[in-house]
Image (cartoon, rainbow, N blue to C red; front, side):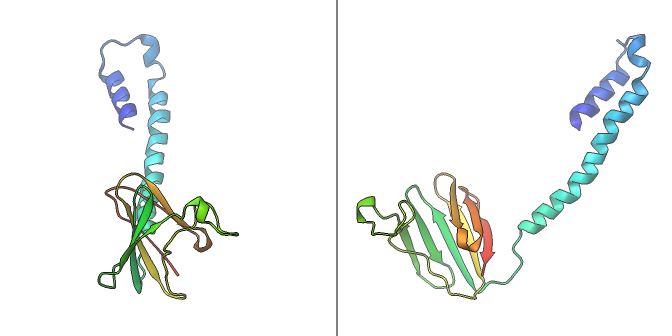
Length: 152
């Protein structure tokens, strides 16, 4: 939008113009600026709705903070004092039949059933992805950003 506005203003204010450029300048200005204005009127309400949908408004009984590290996840149950632990992947040689490689951990995060849970997800080093496919939850853990989601 800024570039189109700048180019339009520079053509209108420039003294170095040709007779052929000025012949259809009005219609060119209209079909350049009109779609940009329509795009702005469509984009602004959509962006507002996007940010409103991202906010979790329900009151949750449990709050769990998951912190992604290079080779493990750290969990902190915020509602209970001093309840935090780290969850490391199991080595391949210790897996039993039916366990999935790179998915099994030594300590699992446990949540109660039929309870609203709010997850706060962040990272210490690089971008990670925290996911529980059976709950339909997948959130990116980004350093210096606290992402939030909820599930039941």
